[in-house]
Length: 445
Image 1 (cartoon, rainbow, N blue to C red):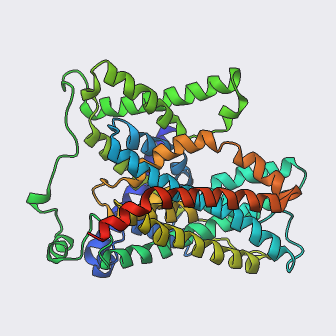
Image 2: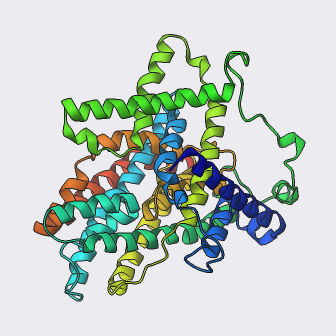
Image 3: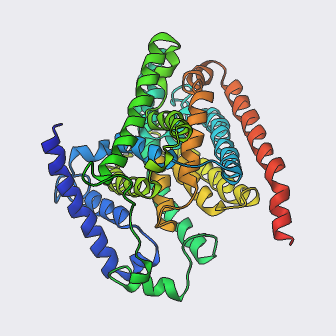
């Protein structure tokens, strides 16, 4: 792909984004269900594209937006963030929530895979684990897990199964996720979007009211020297370059496992290293968080529209019944942990955190970001930032999971169930013990 071809594809992307914006502006039901313009534009592109109506061709580059943009978005979320006690607390309850879902899904995917195979005996050995890779990880993770199964000599059926599950999960995350968004807003669970008179006026205006307008960033360097936006973007890209280089060198000379770390960690690692250096040198004022948030928001619009426009609708398979049964069980479990459990341990932004984890753990990280965007139009909520920090920690702590689970699934399946169950019990109990008392005290005041 050349820059010229990408530039051409971005023109098509712009048409769909503006189409989504205009449709949302003139269709009040879309406003009332809080669908962002990027989601609407993505649906327009998908429905009119080759998979449904065949009216136009969706550029192939749309499907690759998420691979690179998620790196930039995650970097923006942590770059220049000043860590204090309240943020650490927010990260901890999010860590307990996400990893309760992670290990719970490992146990549940393995267990349902074992049990359903008694009925559908043609299912591949250890197929259940692909559900965890699909729902918690997404299409990219499916390919990694399937490659391990293939290397173990179990064939290539796992790729097809995983891709079907990942597509089903993505559709679920968007559709069921938006239903949950609307329930949450109408019940007053959200921190930043409320049903009231001012919201109604805001939704009816074609332009943001003057009193609500604010700058998208602040110039920190002389314009005669370098453009302020270009300067902030350059620092973010240096963070990504540094993290990528360190992992590459570490993989070559320290531990080969560094090479298998997800690429979304590149910028997080670089930012975690460079930010304290800037603080030590008293240069932290060069970083403008507002501009970084704007860059992240723009990248998110690109990513959301591209991801939805290229959802693979080919979910037909000989095993659709067991896949559907497992999908329903996994989705119900994930929803219970995200909204029942999390409401009882998260003091701040519990709904936004639960929404992000639900979208991430049924679809992918971009889906979680898209759902939160619907209830956090100004990108001030904590979940994205907490997820970025958590990803940096978990990327190292749980780097062994993709290599170990397929082996257990095909040799010691009940050991995989036990591993997931123990991990779930630890994370669930940690959140309950650490935070439940504070939440009860808050509501008893």
